[in-house]
Length: 304
Image (cartoon, rainbow, N blue to C red):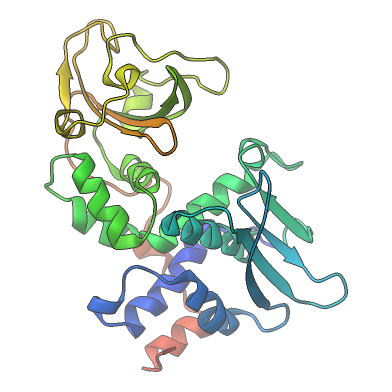
């Protein structure tokens, strides 16, 4: 069976949502409603029949096939109290359903922090692909770009996006990093050390990244991240001279500390390259689908 592309699968859904919903009802995407009312249009042979909150330990969510029937269910961690994170988790599990359930022949996908770092036997990071599907379903490029175009980066701008799409602030920042042409880096730290970091494409190509998967990386002593700042000044961005984050280069650091989680989300913006773009290897306009579901919309029939 031909491998499915997570962005294409997300586009299949949001094209129908664009056509079927008015602009004031389009966002945020209610993934539970999508699963129950829209996904059956794509497949009736092995449907998702249940979305359930359960008490998990170390797991954010899972997609599980019934042991005897051609049915699936999505479960998410009841202990997560952030609605945006739950919404993204359900979308992530839907990504496994749309992209991976047939190609990999698996009957269960359990998704925790460690799982997201592992590749499967085919050398594919399916957790990364499921995240890519979820991000593009909840935050389509064309609408996200409309929110950020000609806007200076700020934590408040990212919070606006998080509220619009009902996702976490972190998810909004990661989406911004995927679209921006600016040299920028996002990172999450705790007690002076980085959990992870992600560079924009232009930042990575210029050698500005932190190898957090290979090494234990400490945040710089005089950075806002090290000070666990949650001030207006830190949110708006502070310009550091050369040597604080990178030798020979100034950096604007935006930082916000969460007392609840004890972690700091930081975005570093280097020199301005300007503008926003889609991923280089994918063009939405060239990938409009012409299967029965697109025809369903073209004929003027709406799913709601």
